[in-house]
Image 1 (cartoon, rainbow, N blue to C red):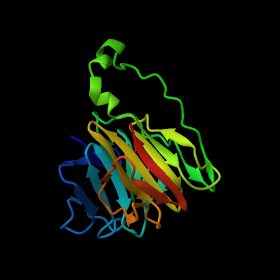
Image 2 (image 1 turned 90 degrees about the horizontal axis):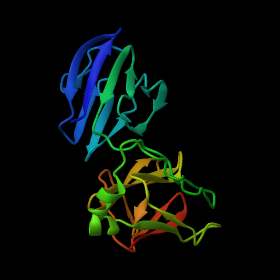
Image 3 (image 1 turned 30 degrees about the vertical axis):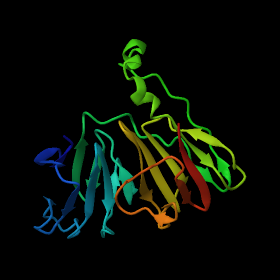
Image 4 (image 1 turned 90 degrees about the vertical axis):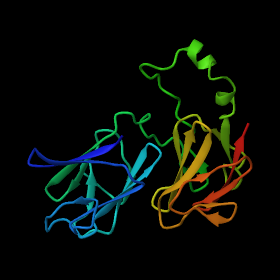
Length: 225
């Protein structure tokens, strides 16, 4: 179970298990994680948990929210990431987290970056064991087909656990591979992506074969074998 370890000047002051879909952080006493310091806004940030993934979102705080020294508005946390708010450091611990989040595809101004070749992973499932996955693995073969722009016709296989699509700063979505299918979620950007013409809200949406996605002015189709 993921948890947050809060410390200041190297001294741990509290540990909080993330057990809810939405965990708030701020100075006000009604927050789930309360940090009583003037550098922390009343409602500073929120942690949103989806399955085994945790997104950190800054709630327009006065002094900002940082992850590993970089200011963020919304970001998927990785095991051992350090969230910095004022003088406080909050370490994210999720030892059973999946592979590191990688941007395998970004659609930009009519161009598509090819998918990154998968790297060998220590302790990967042997071929014999992988064969036991049988039909369930076969059912998770899927691609994103680009329908508009200069890259129309390009197909990008969804081979990683998380694949991001879109245009940074405008609209970015993440497609996550789960045991029984794929889901898409809005990650960042003021222009929300749409699925079959409907905007994607705060919760991930399960993808079905033939679904039409549009974001950053590019139309795509989810195709599942």
